[in-house]
Length: 180
Image 1 (cartoon, rainbow, N blue to C red):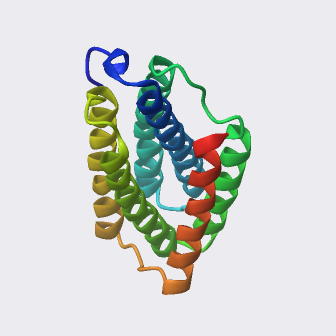
Image 2 (image 1 turned 45 degrees about the vertical axis):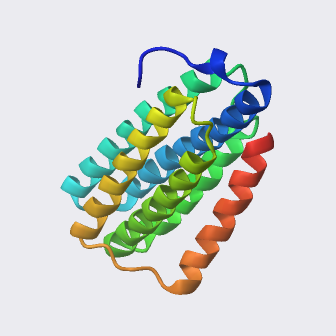
């Protein structure tokens, strides 16, 4: 995470928007931890389990970065974080139960959608908010790496309806987390 805080150079409206975007990203990291941890429960492949748990640990770094940035921007994390975690954990259990190729397909698709989502945040973050932009850029690189890892590890591409359902669920989550 970058040194220094540029929140003081932001207008109140920019600070509120950046804070809301970082809250959404924080929720995403909570969900990622839950997904990876739950998916690790059902794999019988010890190497895959280790990789999933390492990815969850990396998401912990993202969680800390987004939380710190939220605090610097003077806002709050989502009040629904326990709900987000529980829902994502359930989805991770379901994906893991389908078997490793489908579980990895879920990881790959999730991370590709998150990568696109983070691109959108980079477009919306104030240019002066270099600290938030640096966090989001690093997260985007890490999520792309996770997607590549899942694909190289045998991910099965998810069917179109599943990808659409994931996008719709993400839209609900991001819309609610932006405000609450």
